[in-house]
Image (cartoon, rainbow, N blue to C red; front, side):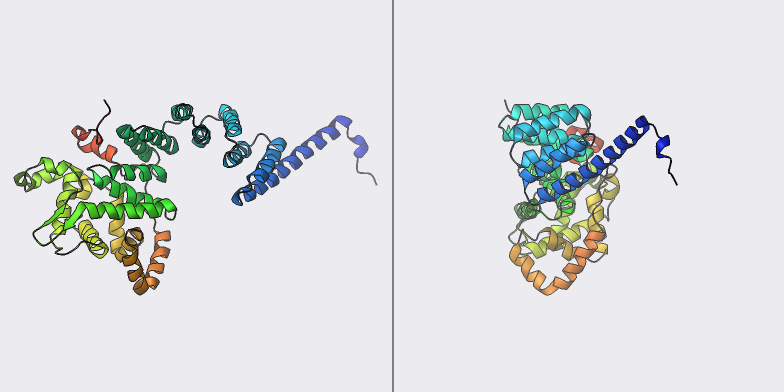
Length: 380
């Protein structure tokens, strides 16, 4: 019995062999790529470069192989080759922001910040709503002491890409140095909820606690103050009592609500008192029309935490690096409940998106355009 091999032409046989070879190469490329990723995790960048290079040789159509090759060169500190790889794939697909980001950071490592800056600008022209590229431009402007412009980039990045954590991180740190500390606290808390466990998370926990400690002072029942924003100070005491004016802007509403909460405290203001203050604030905030006037996904989430009976756990989690001793004392008595909360937190994360994004820039544009002013002294 024959199977008809003699009926196939030499050209047909060659086509079959070529197709089969391509499939074999593609499969082998995936294996090299997977092996390269495993080596990257072990910080074996030399081995990863070899594996990714083999994957590219077998299947150059997959830009992810070329990108990972460039990334391996970057982590291996071969920045010039990284730049060459990124330039090549940008010409093929100019709409991927991480290509520009890696190339720009390579230029920064080579101490060529001007080239990095122009790479980020080029990327932002191609991808105007890029969280990473806004972040990188903000960092460069901040390093050059153009603080107000840096904040504009970071807040634009927050609006463009609400789930990219780094813009919240840098904006929170910058606002901690201004009179508008409200925004350091808001951005810092959103950041911690997005980037739940990292060295930056622990740093932000401490920053937020210190901001609260600087903003709230209680010596005795008569000697206490709260200062989160300079905006409300433009109103006299008589004007502050006018309920019609309490909706003038978010900062005034925030400060008035905070002062009402502060009235209940008569001693030193530490972590347990801060947790009580924050719960009282959320409850009083929702007694007014503020949620309608100033929609805030973070405050909505805090209210959900309270209604789920996890307010103490959430706040001890949030400020665990702000007062480590207080956290440890509380945890010794509440470890089981805290572990239950961590499971709840994983199943009920803070969700931010383009519709509910929390941004000072967005709020000012919607409610009080006259409030647009530099927070840092501008350079002459």
